[in-house]
Image (cartoon, rainbow, N blue to C red):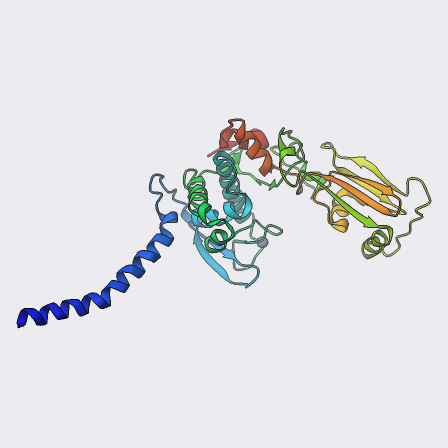
Length: 324
Ligand SMILES: [Zn+2]
């Protein structure tokens, strides 16, 4: 009798605990991808061990371990389908960028950095990242991202012993730009650098076509005294190019714009463009994507495909630097 009571009690206990066991198992499998990388030693970041990340949309500040923060940056900034060495270069560049930004004073009051590529550098949560990948690629891609960060843990780029301002962009269009032509200022390690193979990527070349009316409207928003006579030859003309072949200054009617201003006014992917007046339309032919300064992401992938390591890729884009 006692045995039967015990047996029943055991069955009841099992009924309650089984779902817990199963639920835990499911939760664990969902997280395994991130945690199963014990092969690399984590760096000790000292004062930087926690990064305060501002989420621009909600205004919330999230505290993350440095390398965990970088998983979100690398997966937000570079396609996981890129070569592993390119992802490692991106991880080191993103780490350096973060260290530099914090050392030179955050733009944000209660946070070290934010999640916008327009302000600081992109960041995406693991949950959102996984949701955007095809299901069968999720595990492989996430593990590749984690490995790119963990296998370079603690490594960052220095020039004369100091962390560099490691600008990066999507596609240089074959040649990178000097920062002086974009924001002003210059850094000895940021020079014009050529990379072959970037034409193979989406975003290398693009076109924008607008009507004469649209041009007038956009220019008037920028300069209220804008005037143009489309009958005049050279009413639209590129006046000067930078060392990397980007537009330094361009004339629309009575107004001269810098290439950077024109990019912003017409929403161009880069300042490496040609402009044509064709009938009633103005056509922009654009090469490259982004400001063009520092490391090119598609260029890094092209270099990795040629067999370059992440260190070689970094030293290709930043001159006379060391990787600590
Ligand atoms: Zn920011």
